[in-house]
Image (tube, rainbow, N blue to C red; front, top):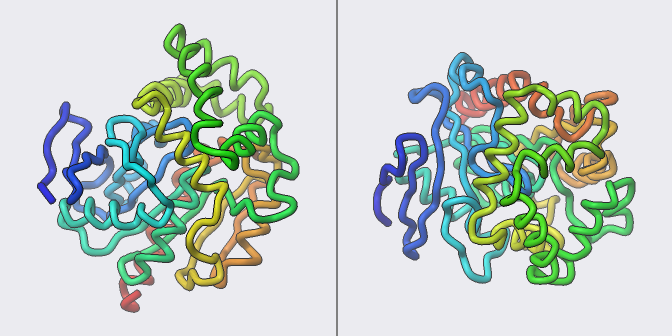
Length: 304
């Protein structure tokens, strides 16, 4: 494995053992508690709260990462969910990091839990915000927005089945990314549209979407296929404490997903935001990071 190489001042890459490049960015306090943030579906390492001083003020070294085939990270053939912890371990080694926290949002939630399963002794804290739950349940798509339910159904069929509608969206995005984002959010809940209406949030959402479209959406298509199939581990095997946050009105990852995690994870702590939706992570960003820092301090002092 090679060391970190600069990309364009903000984004860097690390060369993994198999020769792939993994792209990431760092924000906040360079000497702070390392926190790896795993972006949502259709997004990229660009996704985060626009105010990076929040992470800095809390003493957090925020590291955002493109998953394989997303943004500027290379494609990994036949990728599985359980392969992700090894990529994270290699990135941490390249950055000289021993122990760290992980936070997964939406489609990034399963990837944070894969780390909780595989890297228990390395983790200071684990957080999942509006995370996608396993799909091997009768109610897996219950109360979900029809658009997202359709994408997950296609993902269940194959990566290539979901690739077709993604290519149509990518073609529309290339004609006008802001127009596409505005159209997608026009049918969202009022609470989510309100968050998106902030110009800084809108700018970050569009930038993250544009960067995430690398490799013609193959990374996102693979993510959708991965999370809708058996994950390679059982939730009951995750003994690491996991903090969960969900909006009660979320239609992308509905409340039944939060209840699935709450009942299946041995050490889960669920926080519900009444009447809020899928974009609530950006409203509660400071609260989430503060809670993970506190959990990390306790874990570090007790030896994890």
